[in-house]
Length: 308
Image (tube, rainbow, N blue to C red; front, side, top):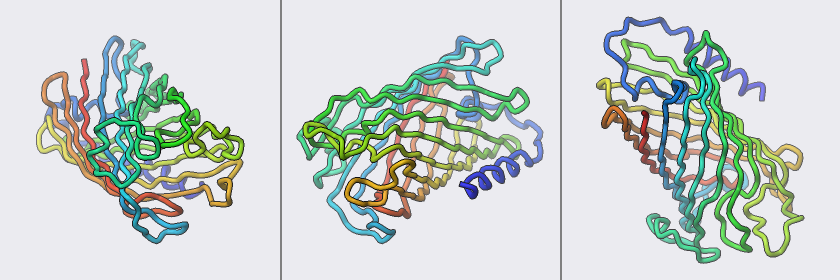
């Protein structure tokens, strides 16, 4: 934990130390409305984000790669936020997710069939989350946080994985810095997600123990994005993420497997402002290493965002 705090402190100090550049070109929505930027009173932000994660490899109980039958997970995340304060420092909204999973070696695109076949596939609305965004410091307008409470809304089934059954409280911290005459931008994100887990040993026979955490846990992804703007309406970026899953009061699954995991992801993508309202985003990510039954797959994502 001390190392994580040190990395975050170094990142903030480094980014705030960039020299201020002359504003050579006006900023577009793509440049201005990063997750760090909050909405004005009465303004709306609606985002539809779709991702397909597919894997045919995972690590063993350490970090060696082993081959597994293909597993694919589709997630649609819809976020709706609006500004409620005159000083643009408080936004409220909600998030809901729809998932579709295939787990028995099917093709990656079979996940788009949205079928329910027991251990082979599951689909449905999985979670909803009331959320609030806050800019805590007036003097640092490019620093903000989003706090959300995730509520599982899908029914129990004895088999087939859909999503994590536990309630979860997630807070994300955002910071960005634009430099180089609005041509470059560094964006950082630190997530703290607390999962209120159930002990799998206590799960009834007609429920799905595989969708429950073995006790409470903390998920900690730390991400950095470096963006370049070929024009005021477009950007390309590269990103890296180091993620940790830490068991808290019960660090082992029933049966003795160590609960904690960690992984490293590298990726790239781009955004384009289609109109004054609509932005389009596409990205690719690859988990390049992991520990303790961590999947080593790829994520393909596309999103559409409306700002008005």
